[in-house]
View 1 (tube, one colour):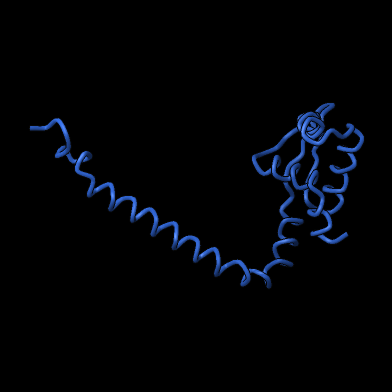
View 2 (cartoon, rainbow, N blue to C red):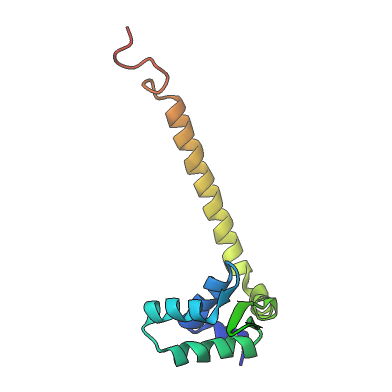
Length: 125
């Protein structure tokens, strides 16, 4: 299975998002995923198995619990496949950053020129 096939499933993407914040037990993952997607515990287990087998997650036994974490191998593989396509979003994202900075600068300049902000507004005679 290709890395992007793994990531193509919204349940598996959500599990990886959850794991990106740190390790979680299978039970914690199952509870959250079942609530969000309305799927059964065995279905969640199947998604966890796919993530493990495809190198996106690791599982460690901790007593009777299984603790899951992100495995960087799968994420790295997906990133390597996407690298040639970065040119399609790198420019537009840089342009967006420029526009956001311009907007912040204009708001700051408008605030600096606001007479009420500097105490020369109403009520100060």
